[in-house]
Image (cartoon, rainbow, N blue to C red):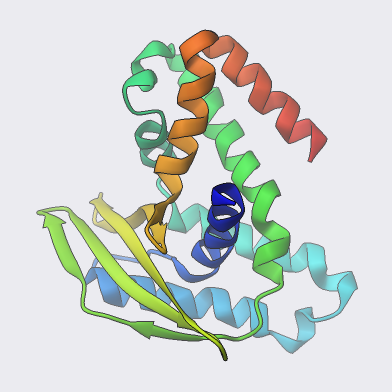
Length: 197
């Protein structure tokens, strides 16, 4: 159940959390949410034949949205130091592909729910949390985006939906693997997962 919730959470996360150039974290998230919504609502991309084009447009936004290294490092936590530099680079690429392949169809099924932005809170000088709510016809889903300022740009490094953290969920899964297996075996597990999807 927890994995399903996080899966749905990530889908909403990918739809909604797009960092932009330096500015207030909330303004950054909101501005980039609009870019994603523009792609999802584009009438020219509604046909099934346009699905690949839509994915490519979302992938470009994803590139601006995430700090892949920060997301990967925080997900592995103390296990990050167990990986060599080449293993870290491969992990970052594989983890990104796992997330993309697991949730792209969920992102594409967005049905125009309303998004409400609440007041951001600074976690440190260069980190902030931007709380939002996705309002459907039957419920309100709280979603908080954790963003970090790097090189003058706010980037998302975690999302918490209904108190479930993306990085915490994957951290638990990867930690379970690394308790008994080597970093190379973790990478092999991810390689297989990417090929299967």
